[in-house]
Image 1 (tube, rainbow, N blue to C red):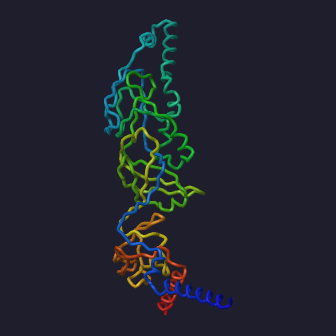
Image 2 (cartoon, rainbow, N blue to C red; image 1 turned 135 degrees about the vertical axis):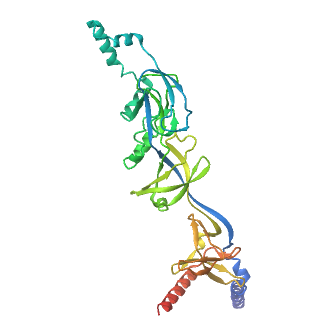
Image 3 (cartoon, rainbow, N blue to C red; image 1 turned 90 degrees about the horizontal axis):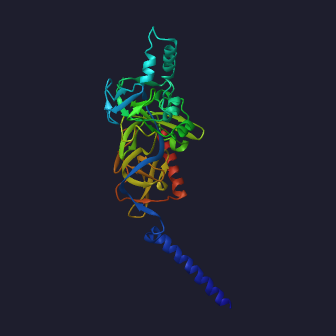
Length: 372
């Protein structure tokens, strides 16, 4: 019985020794247990999907009198100041006109009729536009011949939000204002006949306009005033400037300035789009493989002998999971040429805590020697 136990112990120890030999004495097999990947060339776009609000300067023109309308300028057309947009032919109410023309020799009855006609004349806005005109208030221009006084894009839609969504009101508009006011439906202006005070066309300034969106504070850290980003507008990436960044408790308000006109621009108040903050090409690395030697980021490259060698890197763009870095050689902040990773280098995907700790010791040692 005793001999059987001794034999079992010997077999167990032999198996343990065999495992140690396999793992530590045969580098190729040990390497199979490590997670690595090979560097390849690629591209990264750092983007945010946002709902942005359009802020632009607009002027609504109203009819000076009851008129027949003929549109002369096409919608979305850019016109010069002084251009005739619509032709207006006054519609004359013969009874009111006769009463309104009462002269000094008119009877008392004729004079009273004329006064009544003149008193009722201004209040002739079509029922369809009453709410819109209340919202516009005095922020309109009256025309009796249909000419525009300023250059801009022509539109035949109004929603009453024009004086609020103006560039000089950027600081006054809150997030709740944007959300509620963009729900209002745009109404088409009359194209055959209109009442006095009815909206008949709108002119949108062809100067700078703005896109405003809200994003969580963490994502908002990518934005700063003066930075150039691109906005997907009708399938085209349009470069724009970050005009203002306002950080709140939970969200960041980002304001972008732009000048490009796009289809649907004059009717829409909100743009669901993709903002590209950065775009770069180079070697792709996983963020999980990046370590630091002091302040210098880098990765462990596995050589042909299975050794892990630290290589410094310079990051072009990082989307939080992967990054794009320079290949072969880059120039550091001091103007020095630095050898870095190359195409098809084998990268250690998840460096061990021991390797990272040893790297920091090396950095501290080198810093101390340099200080001497």
